[in-house]
Amino acid sequence: MLRVSAPASVPGDLLAGAAAAGLRPNSRTALATLSSLFLYEAGMALNDWADRDIDALERPQRPIPSGRIAPGAALAAAGGLTAAGLACAAAAGRPALATATALAATVWAYDLYLKNTPAGPTAMACARTLDLLQGAIATTDPGSPARPAALHALPAAALLGAHTLTITTVSRREAQGSSSSLPLLSLAAVTALAHTTAARPPFHLRTPGSPPATKPPATAPAPTRPTPTRFTSTRPTSTALVTRFLAAGYAATAARPLLVATLNPSPHFLQRAVGGGIRAMIPLQAALAARAGAPATGAAVLALIPVARRLSRKVSPT
Image (spheres, one colour):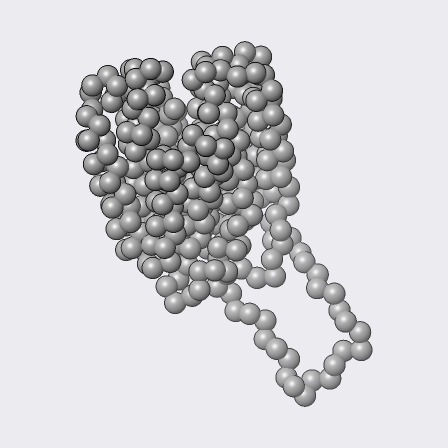
């Protein structure tokens, strides 16, 4: 029911968020990651509880329709995991708790109502966006405002959210099949996201936590003509190459099953495309971390791929 292979894509959200904000992971990042893992699994349990009648017709092998887990036990697990996630977030600080509360509300709203509406994919994308922002917010020093860090991490969160929107849209047809246009459009979206991720990120005058520029003394003479601000790249060539390599890995992981699904958009191949899209989140997170100038963090995220592969052989992520 918890589909333990899928949560391997969660820690990268927080690590990429911290890197995008220009911060090093710390103990609060670890607490926020644990919180997100609990909330992710809460969503898995709640999803099976909410879909128990549909699964009885379309996927009778799932735990609740097959009788292996009682519906009440699944709902209780969702509630308990949500409480555990919020408790871990509270230990990381008030800003982290506020973000986790918004994330939990999004998860419950998606599973109980939004999933079967046109807003479903957007709600899922919002959940992943919040999860990456949580990495920036929770990692920020308690005495510093979290808003600047969240703003720095917002472009990376938007890219991850766009990928989630794409894959969730495909997942809505994984039980019935679709026309070739759906995986084909998703393939185009993945290609565009990979290209954007590999491109140069927005330049910043300073990173969160660095002191602001001091104002000149009041007695200083005014310059005769304004001097334009010059932005310089903070990414060495090697880091840019790593980013492009990771972005290419993301594209290959997500695009290959989508291409197959374009040729044969049956439920089987659409499910494989969704699974590939979930696994592709890990190289995307690694690329986003490297894009922010933290290739070591990207390498740490990339190390989760063997774990996800090994677990997915035992339990499907979809």
